[in-house]
Image (cartoon, rainbow, N blue to C red; front, side, top):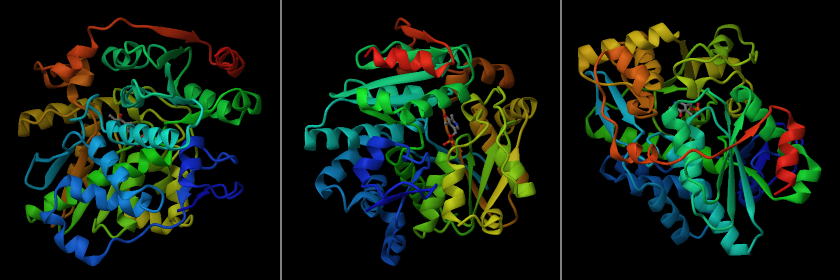
Length: 433
Ligand SMILES: *Cc1c(COP(=O)(O)O)cnc(C)c1O
């Protein structure tokens, strides 16, 4: 399968080129040339299939032309070493819990898949060392760092905004050592993202070292996220609740919801989608006005969604050929302030005994506000509430437990490199490597 750039000015790329480069040469995002519809019988039988069986079929549709089926199956099984269950919150609202992986956030799925795919290519072709650059507003860094930890031939550089990620998030990527380097940038998330993008565009730097990205711009990170939407549909079918399914995704860079939309293009019978935003509501405004206007990001308590210029909007736009009407008819939008998010966590805990994290809270509330008669909603619970312990406990006025695998990270010692938000400083650092 070949991949084209959303900017249309870069040559077609193979899967390997798209994964290794991350961003296309014209700064566009790679898109698969075709999105295969899965056969009728797959959907007829899906409710009786396991998560692994479903994921292997979906993975085959995307990657089957480029990876031997045995190796692909192994990558999928190894990636999905944990479940992504749907859990009832109310009669019409279910939580797709994506936090059962090693770093307790949904990004584990994409990061683990990408690490294994990259390793597959490096081994197959005896390639020289690959350096992964990743900008994070919190959860990407930990998922990528842990997904790649100890993988031979790969070095990871995690850039994060100083003082703008939670302590728990920070220790998940600053305490690992080994092939992982944490870089603490004096700036906001958008600065980190800009430094990474500039590094990919810098010819001298790219001659010096093999660079790739593990942000959701990378096809190997965002496509595998479709696996759990197929599984969620299957589990809802088993419950007899899949007839008018609304999938609601708390969105930041829009990689997660884009994966769901790809699933829809493959024939997954989702009735409609909702993108839930925090105060960074560029997409919500786009739905209202038809105009996409990037803004500087604002800091909120759902910080993994603090994105002022969502990268994957380019993919959504491309997927629907720029048709505002199609986008608007399929995807709804919602936006919530910090006080509203806090109030949602509080009420959901009192009314349903379910503890939401601040991101999932946006998704849950959007379903509460927008679900119509006869519809059933599934929202992504994108992180474990304990990752945002202080915020959550303040909202629900109760203690929450820290799962053991999270507590383990907090015992480590922080090690990071300080960096300004100037590209020249970042480049000098990398040139020294
Ligand atoms: C990354 C992240 C999001 C946003 O996902 P996108 O794919 O960037 O839209 C939402 N919630 C949590 C907890 C995250 O880590």
